[in-house]
Image 1 (cartoon, helix red, strand yellow):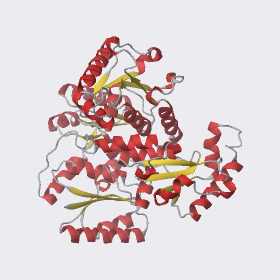
Image 2 (cartoon, one colour):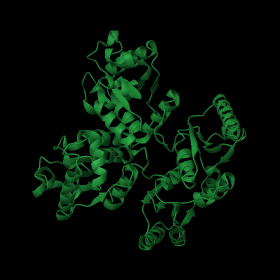
Image 3 (cartoon, rainbow over the protein chains, first blue to last red):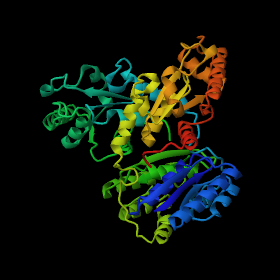
Image 4 (tube, rainbow over the protein chains, first blue to last red):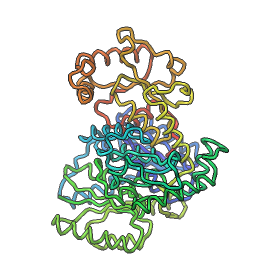
Length: 269
Length: 269
C-alpha cells in the first residue's frame, strides 16, 4: 500500500485537506501519516528517514503533500525521495500577481489563534449548557436551536457548529414524554420559532442507532422509530420549521447544509 | 474590499481550506463567502449573479476558489467573471499519472459519511460523559485524559479531539478543593497515568479568562492563577505527565500538538 505523508511546519491541517481532497478522487487504499510542526533541521532529518523507510517498505514512492513556510525545511523534505505535491507553490505566484501584493508567509496563520477566539469558547460553553434542553433561560441568545426526536444527531451537530463556526447552537429533544399523537411545539420553544431547525432520519437508521443503546426496547423498535419520525416531520411541516434528513450525511455536511439554508452568520472563517 | 468565494457541489470545506491557506499568506482584508451544494444549473446561475454583483460592488474581480466534481457546473461558474483558482485541476493529472489509476470523481467523498461514523459519535458521547471529571467509571476506555486547572481549555480540546478524530478524550480538573500546596495526582487518575496529558497557560491569560467568569474573585486573581499554574506544572514534572502551554495556540494547534506528542491513534482521516 502507498503511504501518503502530510507534512508542515504548522498543524498540517491544510496539507491534510489538500491531500485528502485529491486522494478521495482515486479508488485506492492509502496509509496516511501526518507530521505536523516540523520546524527544525533535526525534525526534518527524522522525517526524511521516515519517507525513505516508507519507500523501502512499500516498494513505491510515498506521496508527499506539504505546506511549508520555511523554504529551507521544504527543500530538505522534498529532496529526500517520494513524490511531492506543493499547492502553495503553484498558486501563490498567480494570486500575488492578481492582488498586486507580495506574499508574506508566516507559520501558524491559517490555523492559528484568532481574535475571535473567546467568541468560539463562549459558543462551546453555551452549546454545552444548552444541550438536550438542559437550560432554557437563555434561548434568546441562541443563534440556532436544533430540534428532533432522540438520537437524530442534535448534539454532534450543535457541537460542530460551535467548534467550527463559533455559532451558539442550542438543542432541544422532542421526546415521547410528549404525546406524540398530538405533537405540538414545546411551549419553551414557541418564542424562538424563527431559530428552530429540525433534524430527521430514515426509520431504519434510527432503529439501528437506538438498538445500539437499548436493544429490543420499545424505544428502539422500528415501529416506534417510524411513528415518532412521521409525527415529528408532520410537526415540522405544520409549524414551517426547516428540516433535513441526515441519514446519508456526515456532521460536516449537515452543518454546511444548515448554514446554507439559514444564512446563519458564522463567527469564524 | 475583495470578495473571496468558496464554491462547490459538495460542502465546500476543501475549497475553504484551500482558499484560506493561500489568502492567509497575504496581508489583505477579504470578504469571505461560502456557497456549498451548488449542484444544479439553477443554483449555478444564482451563484453567477452573486459573482457579478460582487465584481460590480467591489470594483475588483472576486477570487473564486472552487472544487467541483460536475464539470458542466464548474464551466458555468468559472465563465461568469472573477478569477478562478482550481487546485483539483492542477494536481489530479499528475497524481493520476503517478498512481497509474484514473480519477473517479464523486461528490461528497471528501467530507462524506464514513464507515467509522458511529465510532465518532461514540467518541463524542464518551467525551461529553467524561467532561470535567463527571464520570470516572470508564476511564479505562479513554484514549487520553486531559488534566489542568480550571479554564485552561480542557473541554474544547477534548471535544475537538472527539469530533475531528474520533478520539475518546476524558478530562479531569485539578481544583482548589485539592490542597494546592501539596498537590498530588487525584487517586482516580493514578491507574491511568500513562494516558494523562496536561494543559497549562500563562498566568496573565488565565487571569483574563477567569476574570470574564468571576471578575474580582480570588479565583480570578492574578496571584491565585500564578500559584495554581506553578503548582500544577510542578505536579506534571514530578509525575512525568507530558504537557503544553496553550497560551498562543488555537484548539486546532493544541490538538495537533497532542497527537504529535502522544502518537495517539486517530480513528478518522
